[in-house]
Length: 130
Picture 1 (cartoon, rainbow, N blue to C red):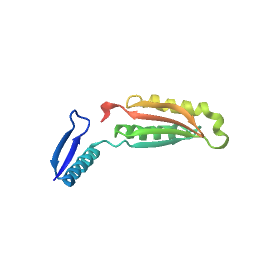
Picture 2 (picture 1 turned 135 degrees about the vertical axis):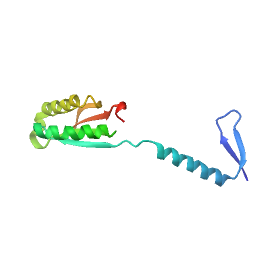
Picture 3 (picture 1 turned 60 degrees about the horizontal axis):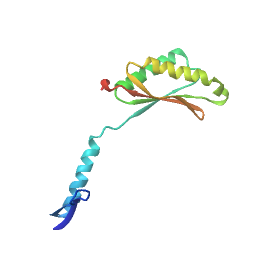
Picture 4 (picture 1 turned 60 degrees about the vertical axis):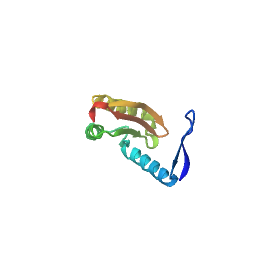
């Protein structure tokens, strides 16, 4: 048996006489149970080009809607290759159009912003979906 300090911040500190190895085992077991109950955030990615066609946009929009309904976040990005970086405004319009189409199932977490050759936007699902 060992003298174990249970909560050192209490006034006065709380100590118990218990088997230390069993105490550590129980603590690890509690931590593992808490960790398994936490919800893991899943991020799905959608890649667009600055000149993405209407049919491709609708196809990816349908996938994004499914991902948000399943409770995953959607990271949509427009990838600019070579000289297509001059179409930044088209990329931003495309992402804003996506956000507007998904406003019934998702909330824009991060507005479109340029990061190197990518313009990224993140959409999180609304709370009432899941």
